[in-house]
View 1 (cartoon, rainbow, N blue to C red):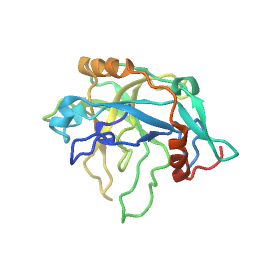
View 2 (cartoon, rainbow, N blue to C red; view 1 turned 30 degrees about the horizontal axis):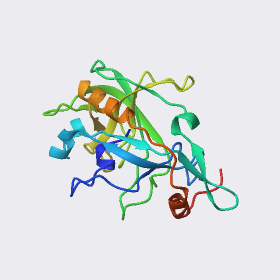
View 3 (tube, helix red, strand yellow; view 1 turned 180 degrees about the vertical axis):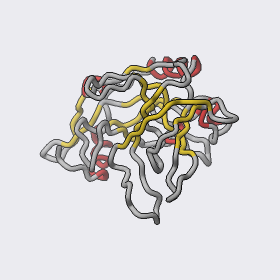
View 4 (cartoon, rainbow, N blue to C red; view 1 turned 60 degrees about the vertical axis):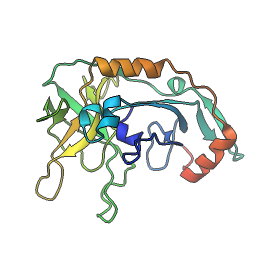
Length: 224
């Protein structure tokens, strides 16, 4: 699950191809392998208006993970759900709950490279309605270009089991120093649940390892 803007070309409204998911990615390390996306699902409302954060979420199914063997060839690492822990999903939650938001902020080209996009950051705050939209907001600073990160309820760092209730869409406002002071995210409702069920019904399977090798080589991953 991620923001729809990460799955769709905003200019053409067409779904991106050759996207990969790298769970727990950090500093060019892929501890659980690389997963090529197969089918993409986004709400029809997003394709009608890509600027509306109320519809800025989507799902992707993935093939089995791929990793590099010491010999240099690509190997099948098995299904994503067998390799990494999962979080719960929740919808129709009470507005006003205190949520945590996570993301990999990246500084725009030409700005000081304070946020390279390879390190996870988070912030927390109470949710509220976004003026003029069905989306929700949180007043907290996660900083630049963190779209696609999860918004989580009942976050307990020690327990590690939480509920994803939203996806970071866009940042709001600017404080002195040109830093965002809030974020917007879609409110998960019955339409979200329908799209999730549609995506969950799709099967994936083994990746084309010959096609995955140049993708792995291009990523220049470090040994875990």
